[in-house]
View: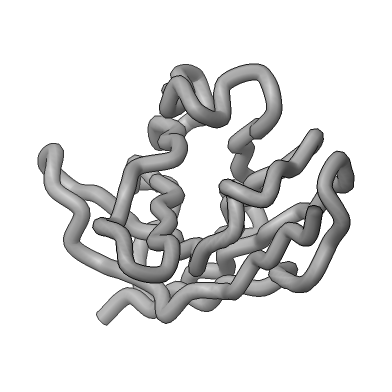
Length: 117
């Protein structure tokens, strides 16, 4: 069973930065495409970014493109989300997820990000 644990969330002012981490255990991390998702209060969960198993390809939601960067370190079984130029609308619970065969099958519990105006 793969376990994913996020960290790095917190309270930040608009325009600030945060770096989220997601540490994986219990599986072959380097096999997974890894993704970040977020869910704001009262809203549906939405895709933020993903990165393929070797970091060769990344993809971003339009709402974060140019501000967020996803990366991974397979030696540390960790995926990161660098978030810059944060906006109040980025406030959400951010979760990482691991995909096999095109489906996200493992999910973390999430870390809270609050951006104040």
